[in-house]
Length: 350
Ligand code: AVI
Image (cartoon, rainbow, N blue to C red; front, side, top):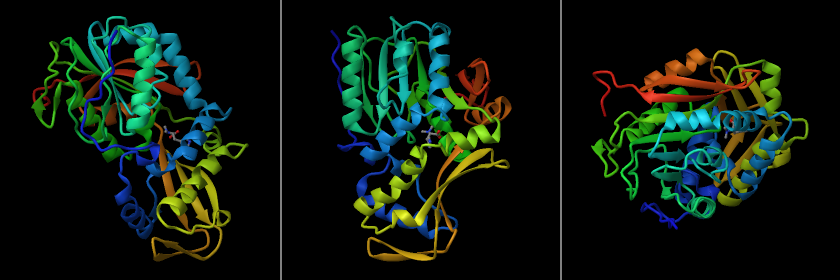
């Protein structure tokens, strides 16, 4: 039976609250965002214990088609997706969380060299890795605790893999503004090419052409999009407002949750849903001893959820060094799961 071993020297983190930024920088980062114009808060702060629960509830909502649609695509096309990954590959999942969707692929990949779930939350990562090890006893599971937006080193599997394939489901790419999304695609490209920090890692695969399986949401009817982020039961509103509750607890803030309103609007120029919290009145809020003023109707931007056309995604992917090879979609063409390969043009090696 394979053992789960943790490969990385990242600091111990307790829960999703620590996603991407460690606690000491929280106050400084929050103040920076709320002093900018327009005011902003990073979506990473959504995911404390309550925020993670609310996000799980969002995924079950009738209006939130994303999780259901992607899961359906993965279920129906798991065999073809597995074929694009090929035999003896190293599968690296960015932001693996509970690794739920991964199982659909693992079921079709009995000869995987190893599975590397990557997540910044050590507790969740190890718990999920242990569950995967228990369910797939012959699979080598090598969890890597890392901030996946930055280059990191891959753990060395016992078997030399034929190639490396990154898995990034969930349309999480859409929560990155284009420059950050391109940067992330470049990190994935370096990882899939077997190099990190610009050097060849111990994982050098026999086949240098790395792959990427990515899920992303498509541009569609504005009403469908806005309802997905402003559901009738008010779960997304609660999820959005919870960030203020979290800052009251973790950043010494005194936000009055009754004095802010959830808003989710489609921005057609930027092709994204913009989630905001609108101040219902003129007010002063204290954050770690600093007093910040909010005008009536002033917005805090809490999240951007970018949607793509096949063309706009291809352009983004090309800027990150990837070329589309295969597309799987649903009957309504709401969502794409795509298989991409590293662009191996003359100036694109490495
Ligand atoms: C995590 N991410 C892909 C979700 C999305 O749809 O952009 C986050 C979310 N925010 C509100 N609802 C869901």
